[in-house]
Amino acid sequence: MANTTSGTVIFDKNFAIDEIIEEAYERIGLQSASGNQLRQARRSLNILFQEWGNRGLHYWQIGNNSITLVNNQAVYTMFRATGDGTSDATAVYGVDDVLEAVYRNSSNVDTPLTKINRSTYQGLSNKTSTGTPSQYYVQRFIDKVTITLYLTPGSSEAGNKLNFYFVKRIQDIGDYTNATDVPYRFVPCMVSGLAFYLSQKFKPELSQQMKLYYEDELARALAEDGSSSSSYITPKNYYPNV
Image (cartoon, rainbow, N blue to C red; front, side):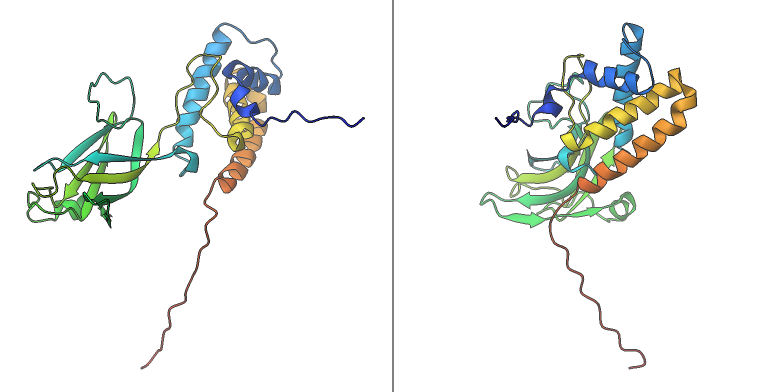
């Protein structure tokens, strides 16, 4: 009689925080972590996720949202964290950066907006001019992210939408029984990364070895976590001395 398979593919969602911590400690030779060791590991895992924010774009952390435009209002605020004490029901939370945006009119027709930097925005002569927005400038603060539109929406644009794709922050660890806000592709490097962080505290002699494992597995996960769309490159013709 042939053996049967489980029929499930949900290991990453049933892999609770306490099991991740246990696996990481076992990799550096420590068994039965408890008490302060658990708290230290949870803190390290939160720091690891923040470090991943510096590792480039993570496709599973891209969100889409819309903001309703207000007459004569150029600046729109989004927040990095959820429990920040604000009561704005229209606010967008968990935003780390804005990737691209469009102006969406009442007929749901989109017009792409150009993302500009601070210097370009500063060079605009009349920042209070009203009309259909064509550009936007993003500022990333400690506790919030703002989008500044140019032109400033006027009465004709009020009630229409700014639709945008944004980079979300990875959710905090929370309770030990939680699952992580990480896809299965990143589970191996998550565990290896936590083992590397813990080795710096408890087994420094293993840190270099754990770092190599971590960087190797993270590189594979980042390579896999991409877009599968086709790319086309067309060479530009150049005729010298013509």
